[in-house]
Image (cartoon, rainbow, N blue to C red):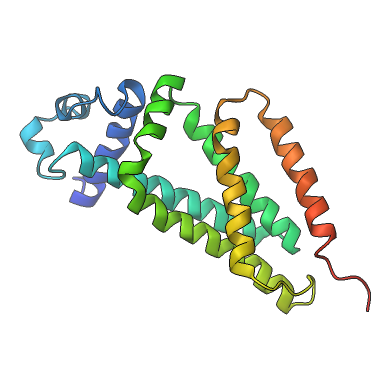
Length: 198
């Protein structure tokens, strides 16, 4: 059975991801990707016109996968605290899996070039903040949490804190210790937000 163009494109993205993780963004060429995919460079142009287009497509794929994982984890929680912790843990488990495929040098290169893909990243960062806002809005609406004056700001602060830990989590070998510390701090945070008996 022949692959559709969409299926072939997805397989090419997976191949391109492997090559980029192995060589890094700067060193990877379209020839490298085409060779690994077992096709001529001219055939690759049928799917992607340039390396930058491939990288943007990979970012979109990865961010969609991450968002789906975070949504699923949040939906599985019973309380606002469970939901937020599920979301946070899913995010860092995803980061751990993704970062384990690349060397420190390649990871640093991806970080240094992230500004070039700020538009793509900003969209998904906003989507993650929206997920956090939804957890607090639902918790307040159901009477589980005290009212919060500015939920949008609260979500921004929480998400910014998460981003601040991203690279520590990526490179630190004691990831479970970091997750344990995050969970402990989150419990303290929610202790002040939970509604007591009326």
